[in-house]
Image (cartoon, rainbow, N blue to C red; front, side, top):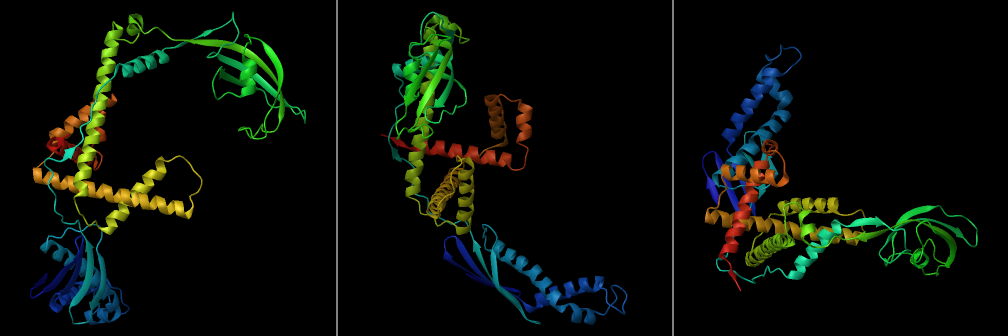
Length: 427
């Protein structure tokens, strides 16, 4: 597309959906006027020997500062001309345009080339009647039983045992000291709580703990195999002295009405089970809706072709990679192959994130889905209640720059996804 007038010539091409290449030329007259203006600024503040400040002849100032003046003219005109071209063509750049091949000869026009990345235009496929699998959110009685058992576990009591020896399931406080049978070197005294019968216990300790009473002591030896998982003890024979300092047994409350009353607002275990059942059902319904939303979006995204701007993909990939590394557990330094795989995964995620947002924005625009200031205020109030913080504090926190806009975007996305799910056909 070429546009020309007496003062500005511009040619814009689109070698890719998200890329614009611009060739612009500003008339010699406009450039000369800008040069004259900048020359006047230099003359007004130049300090030249033999002349009072600001009174040196313009010809002298030009002779001394021509190189600097020309650069000032370029720095002033190139952004101005580029902005004019972008505005006249309704081009909304992503990131900072790249300017190259700037040409400016004395008395002549100013010309340059620029490369601009933009959000791409794309066709949105039909999103009405997307077929997705219907997900059940049923709750079995076994699910309720498990939740009640978890509540009973949390309310368990640990009662001292004095009239019997250790049994499987007991919690035993032990003092343990070992001695290497070969070197006779003593190991540090250890004090620990051991759950008798636990699969992860040291077999030597587990075997000799059985039958001990509270306060009882025992000495024994154990030869560890060369391939024992505990590398510190593998291949060694250790002479142990163990003392059962105390024994406690875990006692669970009965899952009855008396237990229900300890939970606060319930009179019967049946009421507890009803509440648990409804909460599990609500949680599974939310999960099912999220999974359905992902199915709808995947179908829509798979049918949408978008040529994403490279600079935006790279920026988003860096953010994805930074978040992944910040949330990951400490690990050994990555190999070059591992680092490259991580970068590739971050790029794929970045492309998915950007494509998803562009599609949601386009659907929202087509369906005129908007979020009002009142909607934002209501969401802040809901968040304050959920997090149990004063409303005034929540409102103040959202006054920080950009936070209300971010919340608006989140709510708009949520409404758009709800709209798409509402249009879907469950099978």
